[in-house]
Length: 278
Image (tube, rainbow, N blue to C red; front, side, top):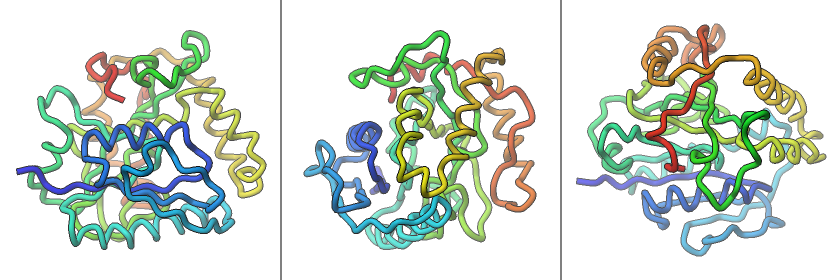
């Protein structure tokens, strides 16, 4: 029996990823099971907005840290209400896509309908990155994973985005307050914030974001474009299980319920079986 599954997110000034978020999760879960907070009455509605549940809210200008906390609190409270009608609630940013390993032979909604013993599930974080030397700008009309071959396995995006009962997420959905995490062996969270250098550069030019404290974040992200030039990628399937075990055993010093940074080669070639899924 397929369980009722909802997906929820919040977005401001980001139609590029949002339209794909709606299309991807809408096809898997059903468009009427998508819930989107549009941050600002000045924002244009995305394509297919009429198919989903959206709430256009007044924008409150907050710095990056306070903004992340406020967003996590709002979506946590909203997800608690959704859990009165849904068995599973996914909370992601609009550039994050939960993907099931095709080797399972199941669809994502079928897999999430299994009986799990934890209150939440984390997917292994895959931070997809454009190779500045070998890969062209992204073609919006084509799938991302048909155009990108490289990614970093990331502790930051190994996030408990799947709630199986009401809970409270921390900033950016990077942890569940007061609870440990469970990394699922077959789920991946593909993050596409670095999928195109031009998109990141355009965000870096956004004066509103810079004034709210995003400058250092962008600088840290740029470093990955340099890192990819000087690191030899490894075959991903050789690293996936090792990374899960490492993240399970090694925690951040000041945050026991977050995985620590990976202390092993982290640049991978994305397995061909994922090509075209997002």
